[in-house]
Length: 424
Image (cartoon, rainbow, N blue to C red; front, top):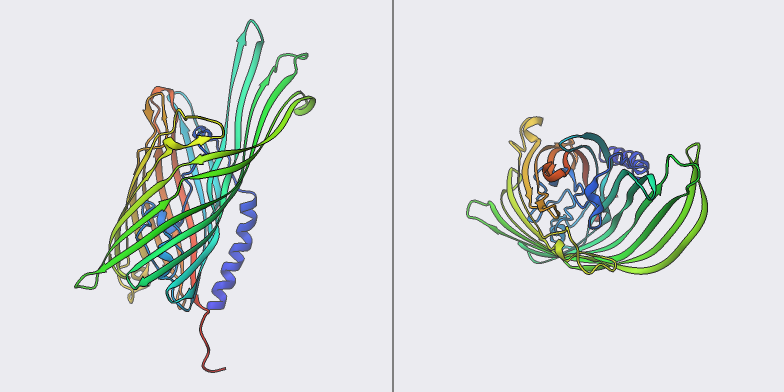
């Protein structure tokens, strides 16, 4: 049975990898132009179905990368494989217009395993941010006549993760994630003359290739009460960092015919190196758990986005410090009952003050989520589903409101690999 489960997960992986390479991104978020793009990336179906909490969560059958100290919960003889996928519907609206689209991608591929009974390891791949926006305006004046200005950006940052945890005593653990960050950030601005046969269009392009390293820390402590329940505390700290970039800037003119562009003159092309100052964040978590039956937790997080600087910027105008609070819970009615009683039911809520302030309006975010876990009979595999609604921003002061409906699916499997057979 276990072999069939892993064969099934392997088939899923083979199917999903091409989807990763051709991820759908059919909607443009105008707010992804700020900072390093949209950092509101889907985590996984377990955490997101509980409002995104995870600082105190620890389990032996999935990899919780939100706090590297949680890797200590992996069994000494077990290997844990965790993979997830998400799809979201996005609705953009102003007081006058509406549009919609969808995004789909992988949320994570993670593996956890023991090194020693006190030391556990995790590694994998997951996204960090994405950028995707387009905007345009048509202008008519006495100097240039009728012309069109277009602005766009595309790209994102991913990270390869290697995490370690260490437990000096059974109820205390420390952890660290070492991350390699990589990706590309492309920006363009175009000036065109759609009504003229004689005027050349022009475009300025900026390419930022990102390759850098990151390091973050975590700790977890739990206290067993007299009735056997657990009161747990979690702490995470993401250090501020400088993202190294290789930059290429170009400026050229072109003409358009039958929908195709033809470059006329390359006016400028230069390359340089730069830095992106990424802010620190601090998170705290508190939870109460009846092991195997009931869990409720609350996370709080602070990120100093006001310290973010892009390349040679000396200050930023729209990024502000962000505070987030999330509350979530999961419940399993009866571990030995019927199948529906063995299922895990989850729910959560979240609130962000928001990292953006535009036209003196804070773009805060609220979210509610539900989910459940389906155990696979006679195995340590869990199939997790989640659905989440998020609202970001408002229509005040000519701004755009974003509404998201996110669907998540993840597979977490545990198998005994590291033990000696007594009989052949």
